[in-house]
Length: 533
Image 1 (tube, rainbow, N blue to C red):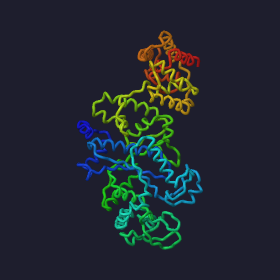
Image 2: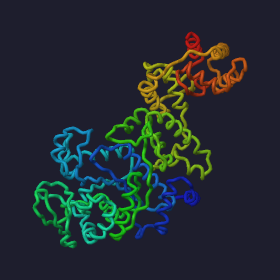
Image 3: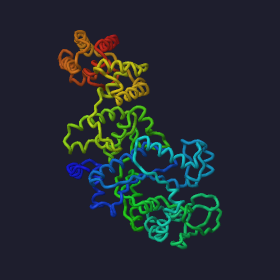
Image 4: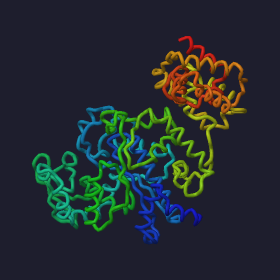
């Protein structure tokens, strides 16, 4: 039973998952008729492998699903991950083997093309669908998998197809004005499957008998064919297919990227013609690369989910995806460390926040995606940024055990078994430093005034016990920076000098925390090396 106070607070929350969920409350003020579950859907095109865009769409939809379960007081829900595997293969993907095999089967439904990976699957689509399901299972998503081919071939879509044939001309009236003249001449809402070649044909179609599902068209060799459109002998054009799916499955919510805005408009009009209702949904902005350009699988300018999880965590990826879905965001290696630390900052705040702030906390939502309700206030003993700075000064040959030794000097009775999240981050910090930080580190020589300030810092550290608290060290560093003797225009200039001369970076951690972690004697050695330059 969901607490009434939580329901009331969630219904007025400004957090976007709750605002999206309230669209469904307005759609069904008394719940879906007959007590049926509200159906959430995500779509996947299995001509390629699952990627970070697949993850973000399932995650964001799940966030709305969980939010709806709260604002509705516990109404039942379902999430369908739909694979459009009846689609004809239009081009050979770059990132799969056996290009010749795929080229020989261009145009055929993806479930009727042999598996180019030779991995024992029935078809190319069956292989990629298995990858999708494994991918979603890896992250613990609660979903039901639905295959377009299964729906078409089994006849599950037959009634909806008859409905499309019955309203064929009305659908043409919607679609034709949106097409170029050349495309209009061959456009058909229904794409027949050639009885000869098995290719999904892009040819004009004449509806002979809507109730029986009979259509007429010209095959690739010019032969006029009259056959059924039912039972997997045809599929629908994309925007019509999307509308038919909404109608046939009873989809209530589906989000999509900005590039499908026009599809949402036309499919929404078509589903209304079919007698259905367009789902609620969010149109989200697309990710950009480091240069601000749209990410393209063919260009390879994006960031894969495997790369993110090599250098960051699943939670940090979820956090980055949660934030501001209607704003374009850069997706590149450089955003990972900040995302890791910000996730933990938000997670640590949860227990102290009043309810309305908690409901706007990204970490609170992410912890609930897969039914997890514990550990809301967990914290990390050190930040990921501080870990990266430690690994940076230890060098590319630093080991996991060596890092834990330093952490043990900084945090009393630290046991990796009691800090699994930190344990995972140590390996990621080592990898991130090795691949991205170490190759760019350049420790510059200090300017004369900076050298004098470093000497003052060294003198202070010479008198400091090894167990001097981080805050005490930080205060002493502040005092040196504020001393007019060293002529820093601002404290920022002093800290930049510390970062650039000692750490080799223009940005860095709280130096008091770093010194407490790295050790007083080791820090004095860094200062000596800087002064020697």
